[in-house]
Length: 157
Ligand code: FES
Image (cartoon, rainbow, N blue to C red; front, side, top):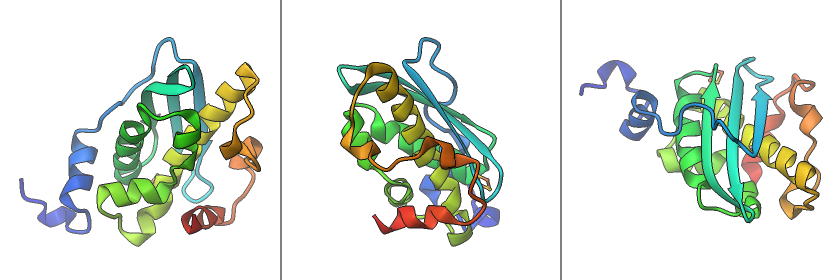
């Protein structure tokens, strides 16, 4: 396939954009998390199936762009089989690295996946009375309130 018109995106990004993994909703999900980007206004929803604190399934759906789709495709693949604590350690930068990079202006799109995953784990932890190290300082209500580019903080990790 020629990617001439898509030259700013590498082949792996294109592959996950055109053939994304884990699209949809888990019917009997144990937790669902959402996130709305303060940068572009797009939305992401992540549903999780959890057994013994391990993520056994993850699906996403989004109003976001191709970069959000590609990021969420790799993100959901990466968190499957991980414990909740392990998944909380993954940042949008890990997803971007797994994709082999995104164009600079599209980095914020990968934040949707990270934040929606964190929100879903937060919901799960709350419902099950779990105290998770990775959720310390996490504020699920900050998602729609900040209109600055706070997500850049996430890239320092
Ligand atoms: S522009 Fe909104 S998710 Fe990419």
